[in-house]
Length: 503
Image (cartoon, rainbow, N blue to C red; front, side, top):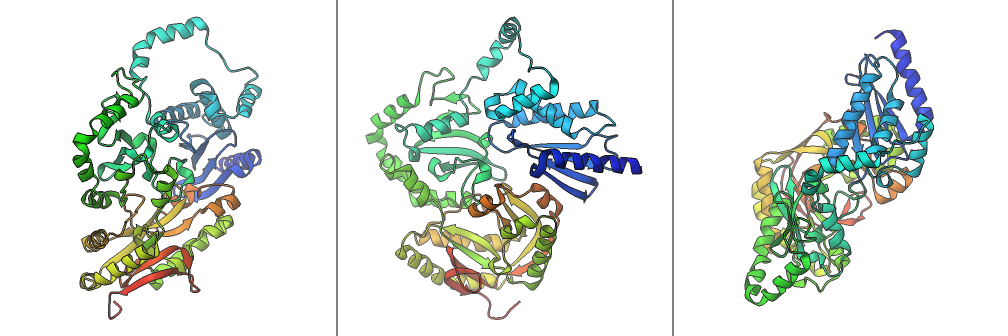
């Protein structure tokens, strides 16, 4: 690339930083890109990432659009990204990033509900930059478009998953713990969980120990075992929007009328075997069938939040050394993330998270761990190893080292979960189990200090291929999430050594 081109890029970057301030983040010399620019305008609920190669602006930048809320659908984001990419082709040879963001604002103004996607200031920016007010379609043209698209509108009139969620959350006549959500897990297919097991906050605002899913992955809702909304089959017996003739009031009344005949079936459907199977899928055990309609939803949400965990402590010197080097390299560029870095004394790989709400439950978990010690030691003799290789994230709030393992660890993990279940210890894993070693995380306190809820995704991208090392499973620890000891590790209610000699 010619020297003039390099100067052109650096000049544009300086201009963007001056205009967007702290909402503009720049990383240099990443792979094939001279710059990666991430901009999150204060008036738009989106983040725009531009990847500049050495030939920019002769060739357009790579463009990625991320939604910071649920206000745009995946389809709308894809359409917006296409519009920006098309505009980039029209700016061939000239600095274009600021213009591309203006293109995005215009698209949002014309294609979405601006109250949800743009702050009032955005409309004024549009007007000021273009010199004209946003174009409005004539009534005749609007009427013509409505006639042409009438059939399509009818097909798309079904109430959305978001509508159903809002109804369940706010309608006091619909007990939340009586509803089940069926959603797509990327690896295991359709999985079901109780509605109250989920956090329905913005995904970027929840901790990784809280169960939350993108709403586009929701496939259906059930009232008890009766399906009341199904995206694929266009079933809506919550609002009755698809013309089926039933609403949730009808479904609930019918269910109550048939309750005496189905009482036995209902009891069986909530027994411990079902919960054990579900825990193998996603680590969430919910025993709320008999309390439907009697318990406060907030009570169950608190009950479902784990407060203990069983883990393997990471002590391998190579892993700790490589982690330190990685964190140091990140902080050289982004020192504000200092408080987000996990200390080496805290390193661990979680096996499962638990709900131990009383002293007796903690005692039961401790006793069950002691009783499975013989089996765990026999399994550990296979020299089970966890290789920490690669970096990924949970909702951009947690950066973690990926754990590679063989079937021996899967068997080890499953045996622990099954034994806990046999002893009545409640496994409360919030997500589909992903073995990981946390590297950085944004806590509630941290997000206030950072004034942001997430870790810059470019950081994870830069270190995604990092190799840390291998940890032998030599012990397991039952730990409290709330307390730590003087050595910096979590307070252990019980620990079991598995190997007599270090491997």
